[in-house]
Image (cartoon, rainbow, N blue to C red; front, side, top):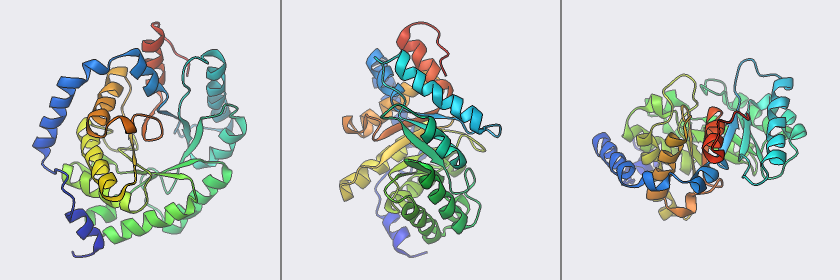
Amino acid sequence: MADKYHDTVAASAVTTDDSQVAEAVAKIIAEHKAENMTPEVMRMLFGCIDLTTLKATDSQQSVAAFTERVNDFENEHGDLPNVAAICVYPNFAQVVRTVLEVSGVNVACVAGGFPSSQTFPEVKVAETALAVEGGADEIDVVINLGDFLDGDWEQVADDLDEIKHSCRERSLKVILETGALKTARNIRDASVIAMYSGADFIKTSTGKEYPGASLEAAYVMALAIKEYAEKTGRMVGLKVAGGVTTADEAVAYYTIVKEVLGEKWLSSEYFRIGASRLANNLLTEILGTETKFF
């Protein structure tokens, strides 16, 4: 199929050989992860967490209490960075915005028919707009996997473009659902389409139906981000989510980002981890005692 989207993807030189990707990841981790297992890196990673609650049982009361713990953290651990954002369903944006008292912590909302993206484009746009109106600083949406896998990349891009417009000036994170895409080629192609459609971040996974983040997926996405930045001059962030629970796992992703993208990406402005259990596990490592704050 010949169109500008396929032509743009075809121009990418990012590797799509799965065995080469696996070898490159193994080499990076073997040679560099140990040097990053430091308290300074743990603190930085804690400040990159999108503290997430996306449960069917979430309520105004439970989300308010969840947000209060972030306020409490600022008071009790003022010497540590707070989390980067609180991530909730879009109907709770106003709850978080109202309860959140600390500066520097954003309100992030999933939207656009999360987690499947299977709804009307008009609904995706409206849901995004309502989340923004409720106080969201960041919007996380899922790429339309069905259209992508069918090769209808124009529809995928149009979908994202409309959602991006609905975000106004807020940050748009596009979830690729890499566990469903499976191959380096699909992950590379989806990364390119998402970035050229206005994504401010590309994100691995929803953590719902399919396998979550993998180092190999993050590596391919990081390569695509690097190539895009070199071509356009625009830095796009990387968010890993889905199954990242231990400090060791978080440091492995940090290592991939550091080695592929470099120091400029090592801040919450361009690197995020979507997690809930990870926060306590990182705190345990930082404080040297088992901690269950969140």
